[in-house]
Image 1 (cartoon, rainbow, N blue to C red):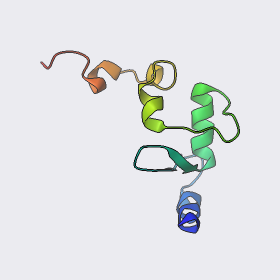
Image 2 (image 1 turned 90 degrees about the vertical axis):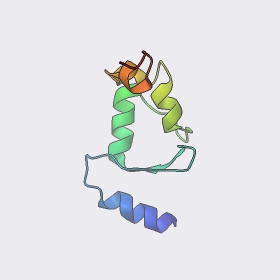
Image 3 (image 1 turned 30 degrees about the vertical axis):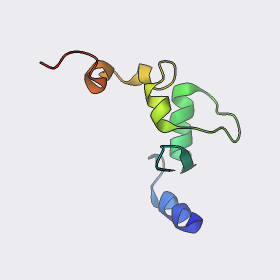
Image 4 (image 1 turned 135 degrees about the vertical axis):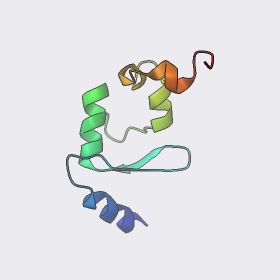
Length: 80
């Protein structure tokens, strides 16, 4: 399985990000484009850091500030 993921991620042309996550959105593997994008947004990552992409999207101090339409996507206002 690891070899298949390595192959798939390597086929994604740089600098486009590609990542493999488990069913709980834990980042398992990523290409260099994903690492560069994440570090551009949140700063350097600690070696071996565990990253949950779902948690990163909703955390107010991680990726949510970069989502300009967060209220619309999170349905924080009543339906119109």
